[in-house]
Length: 116
Ligand SMILES: [Zn+2]
Image 1 (tube, rainbow, N blue to C red):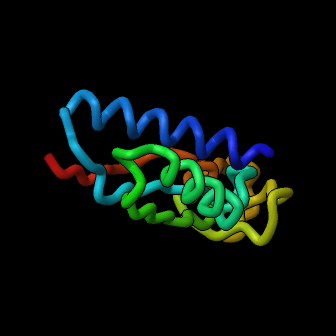
Image 2: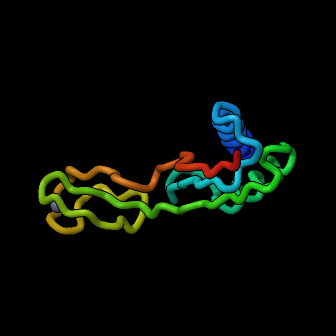
């Protein structure tokens, strides 16, 4: 399962950070997931909860998942807009095809709160 391997790498990353900080426990972690990242945020949260529980340092960690909606930016008229679907190739405002995805593909660990 795709989400399980992602959950495991997130846990590994958090463990590494906790070790560096000599933390006894990690209270909370914050992860951002774009709606277009290809990751199912509910499946990831489910896998993550299971993975965290298997590590002593992480067993009480609260995982907060922040979803990022897709936002496109037009380089011609500098408008930001929410694309109706992934196949959007033209700006909603001026019709130019000089658009790029500004937000929506995130998959990263934003922060962690530790207890030392
Ligand atoms: Zn435009």
